[in-house]
Image (cartoon, rainbow, N blue to C red; front, side, top):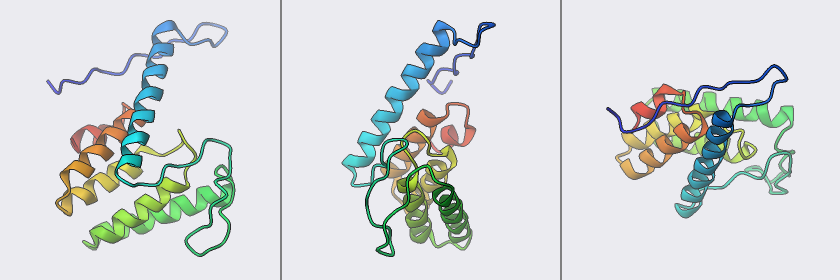
Length: 154
């Protein structure tokens, strides 16, 4: 046994309302995501802006960052994820961590794809940084308890 519990099934009534169990699971998931964000902030990672807001921060090139939910941001996140994947395959793990970190920072709060944390966790493992790897694995599971690689990184 892994010690974790299986995600609660999501049941909806005929009108589409979530069951009490699903509402409780959603509340727990939000709390875990907040805890993961706090852990990221503690270790010095950038915490993404709240959903639907612009961070107002400048991008890596000095240009103002577009709103967190824009198609341009989503495209850049995908690009950074692909760069990170290529860097990981080329055994350039520090570059992979950097790319995944930038992608996570661009995502709106609550909208980070679990594979970004999962992939960065794998890169941290390769760099001999198990504490950071575990933090990312935990964040991955908090974001999506159904994402199996989050558990395999623990």
